[in-house]
Image (cartoon, rainbow, N blue to C red):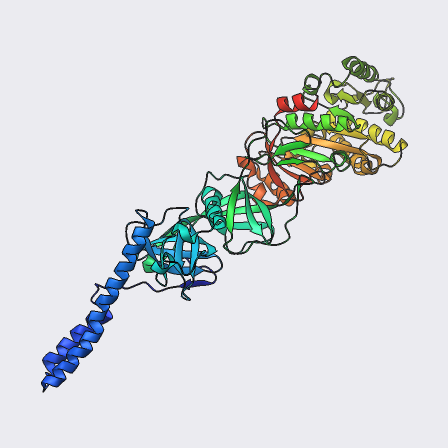
Length: 593
């Protein structure tokens, strides 16, 4: 058998027809003795014959007795009758049977067996467990049979097993067996931890990464999410091997019906406890409080506090085309509903179309025109720092943002690359000087610093006040080694300082990028809420493993579109979770209603 903790192995039963059978061996020795040392009298021969008669023929009677019991059991149980022996006990909770015939117990069958102490117990079959001297079947113990003294229980010999007669099965045990047959995927394996469950898989039931499973932990159901699967092999008796799958699952928590959220698991399930796949009917309509659901269920995941999305910063990371922008648009709508104002720095010009109806296009265009008018090359100054249009542009940005904060408008969309602003780059000569155009990084710095000053004027707050959205963040706030010049490095540092100081004034950022390695880690490390979507590069996986753990980070290359690993201060789950995100069209229909 596979080696497991606390396993009691029962030796293989010897076939009565084998030459090594003790009674056969005794008969042969006795015959040889009679030939070698013939008795000297008739009385001696009669004594030897009596000794043989009291030994060997009685085994025939014993065999006939057992045969009668088997026939009786077969009549009681019917055509499904299978007989096996108890091969081992895997303490606690598992029993392994060995059937020497071609017929074995099918998955889900309820088996009755008698222990060495003569107690009749029941077990629900999980499935095959390999072969040694016979077909091995593993089963979960269901407890003592309903009756220990009935005619049905009397047909079962010690360390033998048969299909359980109906009279021995209680309603509760039948319900347990049916539940195991329908949804049991395996049992809790050795080396499981509080936060990580290892499962010996007995049947796949169409398992996949992200699937929820549950195991009994004390008096409550503890939920886990599958994150990986490994094929393994163990050696059985007589050098036979048994291949199986070991699944890894990460803890999600105990479900709280009142709060509709999970809270942390504080202990581990018992060894060999059954692990059940969990699924529910798919939700018919989006719950607007949820950002997504666990795959295959209607268990939703939402926000503990939507204000934390803003004040503690949020990042959406993933490759092109997996749904980052659709998620960002949803989060923006949620922030607007919470009364937070949003300034979206969008290089893609996508937001203006997708968020139609949530802002005044004419007002937005007037703000853009006023800021653009203060750009250009500006003036030449003897003081290089005062030359160009940068100072005038920065002042107008602050004026417009201040007016935006006082207005009834809640959403402002700006494209940093659309503004043409120049700064003086050299000392003047004959009233002329060289000029350098501000990059998107430098304009992002101007807007971010203006937003911070405006938020500071309004004092400290724990509520979300103003959210800066950095779409294509790798172009707006790049990492130092991804910048094109010293000006961009300085600008990214300035933007980072504004974000670092903004939390206590209700200012935060939403960072969206497809290139995690190219975004400044000064800001990214301040994002306490993360949506990690499909990613392939090692830099992204290594960085995210610090947030979501190695198990979830290893899932990122295989995440389906519109799926994400969600973790952070804003989540109503204490641990990272793999979720299927809301469909954009369904969200709009439900949320805007």
